[in-house]
Length: 219
Image (cartoon, rainbow, N blue to C red):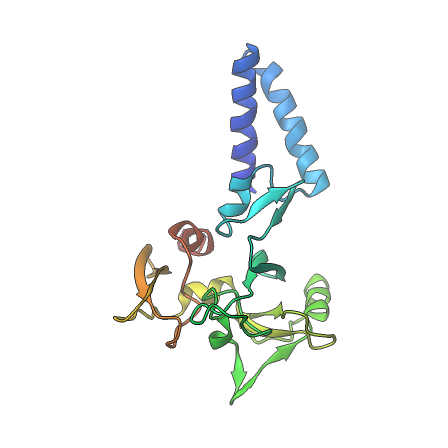
């Protein structure tokens, strides 16, 4: 929301300068009016940068963030929304119907498990429970992420939430074939990653995405 507020302010100032309007109340009154209208309409974005800052290559369409090609937008209790990969990062083929957003393209490897079995959950029930202030079906540090085309009631799996993703160990591979980013507690750094090998959710597509997830937790 702070990013959107700053984005509105910058755009209004730019328009005021173009129109020759003094940067005082004549300029800032419409800025505040538009900003509070944005809040009332619950718009997610005013430009592509508002979306791509949260998820790489996501873009803004009529105030709502859309996910890029080969991904599907899903609800995330800790992030609002995420883009779930359709393709497996190691094979390039259609991946698992049940997966987590991170690491992108190999999220099935970090699903919460009881023994060898994934912990399934009902995404709609989870959202309703959270709105009512009750406990989620997933254990602490995890959240329910819906799968691809999985019928109700148990349509999702328990995945690391935003905080847990940033606190998990970093897996860097000497035989890595992809460049990713991870949070080490002080900042985001680049690493080499092999999607065919074990990893954790502390694995981000870009530095900006890593900071979007994790920097706020260190402040």
